[in-house]
Length: 389
Image (tube, rainbow, N blue to C red; front, side, top):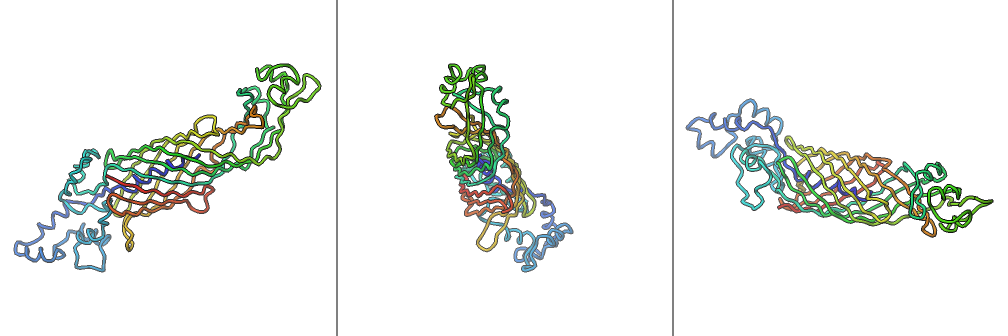
């Protein structure tokens, strides 16, 4: 419920990804062969005089700007790339990129080979602070009772539709610390730890008569007839052996909760030209105070986006979709705390759409913001500040 954040954690790694492109390096090298020996001076002064192959002309038609027709295809691509971004838009240089000479150069695996081929890679390690707030409806799949600390399948089958929970809505805010690493140039793994708090709002109707003989058969309470009802703080209705009454009508219930979140996930990413795509999946558990057991959540997400610059903005823009698979059981106690209504719930609108952006302040620092489209039942907003090294 509250740990939807995790899923969002995938964002930092996905957005600081590189793009591995399929430009023909050998074709670029052939430029030198096309120049006559006495044209060397002209080559140094004006690279646009180089004769281009048919493939390079096609590339130029697709990528080059008409504003600076005197610049070569290679120079135009270099001018268009984002110098503050860790994302390489296209492979346009046949020579190796200069080594970083950092302690962390042992990752990603095959990173040295990728740089020698001319690809730009993000810094391998990242640490981020992520904040997520969201509100979404839940559906109730099962309702049961816990009486005097005990559950009985016989009683839960007996109550049938005598307990109704409706209009269940959960709002929460979660803050996570996220650590990630690029294991391969296209594969990132991460872990998260955080805190969550929020509230669950619902209406509860309970109109139930529990036979004292049924309670005795299941070992709940003590004594006979009215004494058994008294032992679990419920009113008795005769004649003997009688019933114990549980009655709550249209009770507006608000449950405030808090807890800790732990999780992990992985991201696969790649790109072509100025565009990138990624797929992320993460799993988390939240230990919250109103749940009988830990809340489990699996989040799947995919994004398609663009790398580039608009004025002073340099970074990425994207759209995507997310699926949250959340299951949990919350407990609502009645006066006296002898009776608890157990509600199994799951997200009623598991899929929502996304729109987001990343601002690459420097190669090390980035800010990410993401929200969902207005027509989704789940309303959420995420912001992340990350540092790579």
